[in-house]
Amino acid sequence: MNPNEASAGGSRGERSSQLKKGALELCVLALLSLRDMYGYELASTISRDIEISEGTIYPLLKRIRDDGLVTAYLKESQEGPPRKYYSITASGLTNKRELEMEWHRFTEGMSRILMLRGPYGGQFTEGVNV
Image 1 (cartoon, helix red, strand yellow):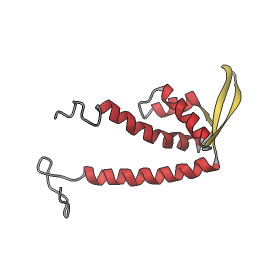
Image 2 (spheres, one colour):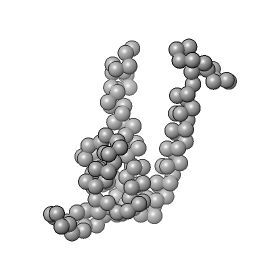
Image 3 (tube, one colour):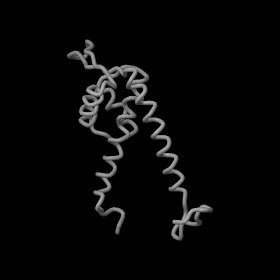
């Protein structure tokens, strides 16, 4: 099958979207561990490095607020109405550390697998039977 064609697992865009959603919570918690931010600011900051839509961030913020990982408060803005800022909680910091460890284990494993070589890309790593 052509890699550009849709598979049983969905299109390449759908798979990319699912991967981003899983990583987005970690991105939000990591940014909020640095300082309080409002929703649009979070979306803009993340979208500099990862392609996301602004609308993706708000359902996530609601969910992690409901889960007690962040709190929200209104703060006056010189550029218009008050903005809703989000602040990470102690539980959010703990969750961030756990997600970060999971992310590192996942990406290290992916890196090892992607470095394997086979008949179409070089040599197998010793001891690997693919």
